[in-house]
Image (tube, rainbow over all chains, first blue to last red; front, top):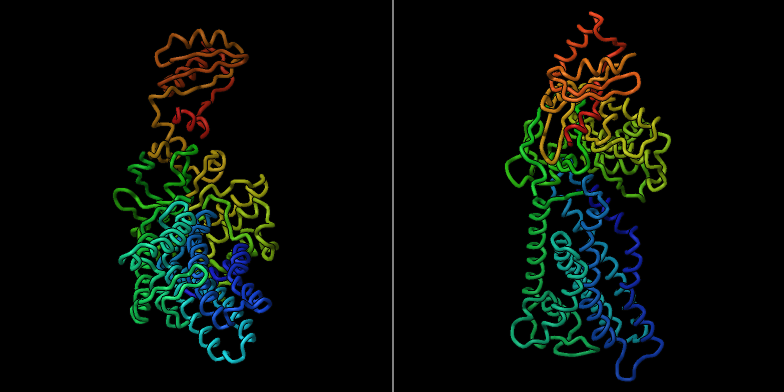
Length: 253
Length: 289
């Protein structure tokens, strides 16, 4: 699997879109700098990290980047007509899928975690009394971000293999389903990935029912074990579905 | 719409040409043979093994796709090396095989160039290199000569011929008839998703008895020859031109015998007789009509 993984990793790292989305991944740093230069009156650095930058990184960027990288993972090979080179080698299609998934998850997680850690480092200097907390939050959120990349990455790879115009559907999912469903009463939100990420974010940032800058956090989210189990299960289910599609799909290229 | 139906053929060592106009189903057949497409009915077998879900088959099969597509940011040697690694070779062997394959397609001096900077013909040869890097028993070449200049085309044809002389089985798809004609006498004619004919060009022509054939007779007396030929059984059309007469016949052997006898007896003057549509292009045209 290593050569395939390295091929995909290299292709992702040198893709033009990586530069663009890399810049987006570092958006929290921009806010951190603004925060440092113009600190708000009613919030300290720790608050900024907990209530704004962490939710933004996990709930907004954590779905956006895997969506763009995941939906185009096989789309690029299909549209670029290079997929026959991969599929006509003595290698199971599952190994291609796993290598591709690993590359997508690694690159998105690297970008998002780096962006967030740098933002945390920028904010850390603003409040020397909160240094330990900032470090704790930074590493906790990095873990949640990595899980977000895994789950969303696997989901969007599946979407890219099955749906026409997957980026459009991906955007609808990220900003329609994931954001909108939470506004409805009842248990509908249990059908979103965001709920389980929120559950972990709540622990990592000690948020409980707090609302900050458009990111409402659930008062009583599921426990961390449930959240991790659901997210890993989703990743496994979508990988299995993608494998099925990859084995059965026609590639008229 | 059925893209391909009931296509069965045997291939032995050597070259076979898969011929057909655009849209005949040649690329579809190749995609089916390489597992890129799945048959809607039935099972596909290649080298005695099923194609679907059997990636190990590609240890013995090399495929040169039609599309001019690469990972353009790579260098030529890197491209072939990467595919050799994906194929399962270790780094050192992959390097040796990549260099050998590039030498074989005469791209050795361009190995370090970026693929994006290669000419169309060089890119065609690069596709060829990745198809032969693992020394396959069966080589599937989909329009391999597209975009090549005549010199390069000839060189690549020589390469295909040399691979065939090593005992490899090669199936070359093309819609350019003279390319296949220059490579092999064994052809498979695919039309509208059906294998319409199989064999040598002459064999295929023999299958077309219901289609009148054209015999061109060079003669100093076209008027006399046309007048003698027109009433004969088996002659369905006569066209007189300067210095020659073209006879359309549904019984070419009988008419040819008459021409020979009549010329020997002095009934008609004949300088030369040849079949106008024995070349592949004409056979192809007739079948398409």
